[in-house]
Amino acid sequence: MPASEKKFWLLKSEPDCYSIDDLQRDGQTFWCGVRNYQARNFMRDHMKVGDGVLYYHSSVEPPSVAGLAEVCSEPYPDFTALNPDDDHFDPKHTPDNPIWVMVDVRFTKKFDQPITLAEIKATPGLETMVLTQRGSRLSVQPVTATEWEIVTAMRE
DNA sequence: GCCAACGTTGGC
DNA sequence: GCCAACGTTGGC
Image (cartoon, rainbow, N blue to C red; front, side, top):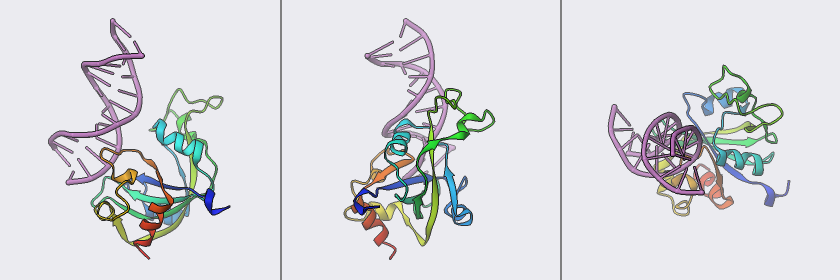
């Protein structure tokens, strides 16, 4: 794909739930369970195979970008929303009328040293990252090409 | 564990 | 369609 079409994202995960180590072990996973419309819209309307992913660990000390991954499927209906026994069940979501989507994500690399949120906040050029904005809670965030360059260069 | 920020819900 | 109440997120 032309480099100009490649997009970049930050995906948040609580490592107690699914960590970069789990992704490294599995190689690939379903990015399911997104139940926020803004995050859903980013996935549904803008995610493409090959997009770069900053894999972020939230709700741990220290919160940090733990590694890199790659989007490896087009968005498709999130089947966990169909399962009444699933935590992410949503009765409004049906096979005929899917509301929620997921993508598949493939492991790329794990940083030897995670890039902490504090480090990101202290890095020139990253002041306007969605992640560093006050009250930013989106679990799927767009990352600019410039931000991607700066962040990934911090561990090369 | 606290609590600010934010999204969602539901009564009106 | 407004907005108060409520639930959740997530850094600290």
